[in-house]
Length: 240
Figure 1 (tube, rainbow, N blue to C red):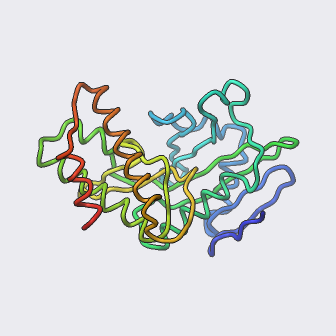
Figure 2 (figure 1 turned 90 degrees about the horizontal axis):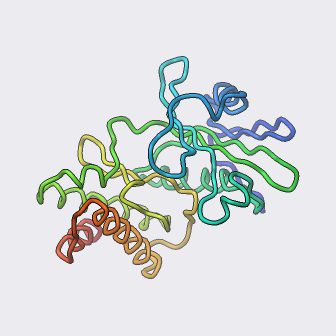
C-alpha cells in the first residue's frame, strides 16, 4: 500500500535509499541521512532503545535523528531490519504530520529515510527540537502536589487533543510526553500511532490506561506510589 506524501514534502530516490523531507530542508536532510556518520553524529539521547541522537546542524539548528531499532525478543534476531510495508518511517511521518496539522502538540518531522536491504529495510527519522522541554515524569518526580496536578492535567489535555483529531498513540508513557517551560505537554514517538474516527471510547480509554500504567511503573521504580486521586487529575485535564 502506497502512502500519499504530506503537502510540502518532497521525495528523493537514490536507488536503495529514499529520503522524504520538507521541501526547504531536502538538501540538508539528504546530506545528513545519506552521510556515512548518520548513526555517529551528535550525542545519544537517554531513554528509548538507544537509537536517537541530538545533532546540531552547521547553521546551529538542533534536530533529533532516530534510527528505528527493534525491542523485545525480536532485537535478538534483527536489531534494525524491518519487512512490512509501507515502511514505518513513512507511516509515522503521515500520522505525525496529520496530528500537527490538526493543531496537536507534536514535533515537526523534517525528514525520513528508508534504506532497502534486499527484502528488508532500515529506517531513520529527523524531527525538530522542542526547545526547553523535559520528560513529564522527570518533572513529576521532583514536583510538589500542586505541580503534579498541573502536569497530569497537561498530559490529559495533550492526549485529548490527539483523540479529537482521530489520532491514537498506543504507547504513551511518562517519558514520551514532554513538558515545556509554559507547563504544556507535547507528545512524541508516533511509531505505532494510527488514524481513526475521533474519540472512539475503547481506543481513547486504552491510550490513557497505557499512559497511567507507565506512570505507576516509573513511580514505583522511584519509590513513589500513585493513587486514584492522582488518576482523576489526568481525567480532569482530558475532560476539560
